Image 1 (cartoon, rainbow, N blue to C red):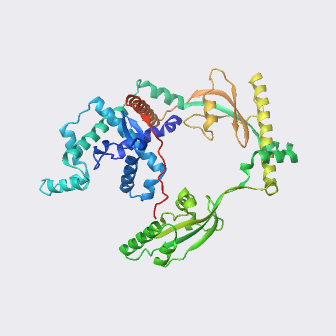
Image 2: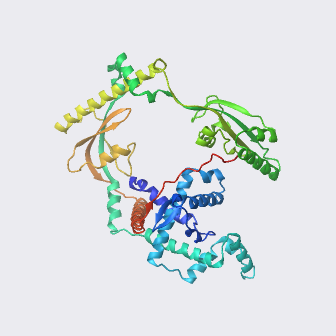
Length: 488
């Protein structure tokens, strides 16, 4: 509904992450102490470093929590997300301390009673099993004091984030003004200048084609591809559930523990090793729908650095219920520039299209100059139609933005919008009117989104303030995990 809301989705995701991920539950705040060599320091917050070891440990815990494999915990995007989360938590912890926030005993009790593991410790008569409670804490390497401190700390962070997120608009009138702008309608006519109308006027020379090829060789490359071998485990869904689970685990463990060959898993489970050549990132020709090598996760794993460079088995993937696949790269074939003669037809098509598009743009520019000199001339334009931001019709993006931002006091007006690969379109705006019969539900939804946006902006500014206050310094970049000896 709002372009501005979409532009601030990342901030909203950060806020949601803080509520969804229980960063201290069952891990305590003891992880905030300890000192390592400076080479392992990544970021310092108020002089206290976040180390590579902390990131790795937190990544492993989070991967286990979501049921992921060790390979997920080693992936660079996952570890970077963990580092970002640790930084946010450090900043919020710093803010909580500086602001001296307090949590009442009643709030802490209510919070503890909302934890399923704690609720399960209450007996039928309402008494609390203190022995099992201490055992639960001990199994997680904590004592009661650490646990209560961590829960109190979590509540303070939630209190802090919640208070910032509840920011209210300075003026209740603002949402009404914005809703009014989104309902405002404009009468529009269009005049298109498309490349296809100028194709017959273009006839590139042989030298032009060669020059274009020399300057754009990256456009005429055969895609990189790999030759692979793979094994597929198919389980009968009607079989014994435990037996099936054991086989699936065995398949996954064999392919992971012996990563340099599929043969051990194939021999153990009596599976055929199959081969496939010329597999690209888009798949391979001739493969049927649902084939294991058409699965996006399988393809993505096969083109990972570890699979391509080290020729290791990819992690077993369940491509459909009861069907598992693992594969490995036999050979990698990088992208290669195709010879001129092989792509001469495509070169001519592209040069012709670009030249025709340029002619269309020039014609549109000339027409725009003429219309500015004679704004009442509507010759060639389509029949008029009405649009608004709430009801944009087929318009979107730059075209809609330019039409809706034209000064309503200077009508009629014409704007030019380029359509890359197609040509140029002129839009004539003749009138502006305010739509009648406003939708109350739509007004309410817009007001809520405006409120959310204000809260997001407030939270972003809040975090920026505490970054400065905590003197955040980036010490070293987060390096990829060295997997050279993994699985050996």
